[in-house]
Length: 131
Image (cartoon, rainbow, N blue to C red; front, side, top):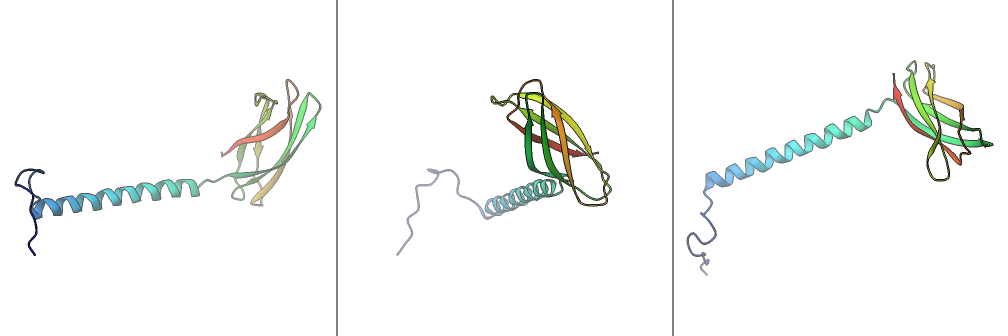
């Protein structure tokens, strides 16, 4: 059985062995660069020095909210956490910067009172950064 060839030039020039090899090399380089980017992003996310877990909060009337959270970081390090009190419409009604550490332990439990401009319905840790 013979193979049917399309008319010459109908679908562009036929690929030469050199052209096929260059295309394969290009795909390998592209895959290696993509893999490198994925690894770089993954290591950056895994290398986050400070993590936190919110434990709970308590509303202290219309003037304050108390939040308890755990900060996980290397012993001896210092972190600054931004804590927000939020209203029913998710507006920020109070904010406070909390310095955590240094501590001999990896996990430090923190309880902070955040003054509010109006009644809050929740309190959250907006983020923590190593200092």
